[in-house]
Length: 109
Image (cartoon, rainbow, N blue to C red; front, side, top):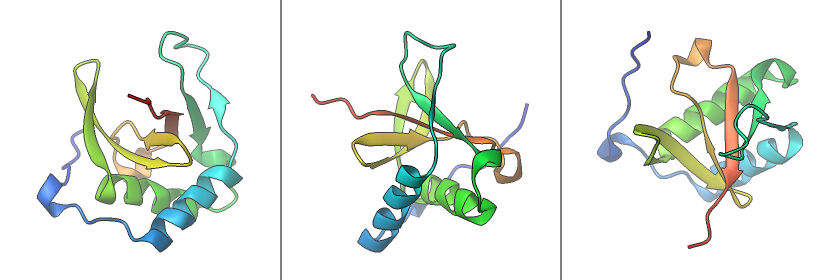
């Protein structure tokens, strides 16, 4: 198993409008696949190796982790960032081992 130090809420910075616009564009411009193995928890994912620019993928992951919010799912806390009507998250692996970004529709409560 791996250990990654997570930023505390007070250590995270608020993303600028320009960063969020750039992030939203990256998410629109990359392909997401439906996670067929989890039909009870409908979500999609994009794979790092399908992105034409690895630096953009890394920058998106860092933006999620540095500017996102905590939310629990199934007893585990993840860091999410919202854009385009979706919430985006990674599984928390070290950056060089992160291979995907997940997304799910934002719940309308």
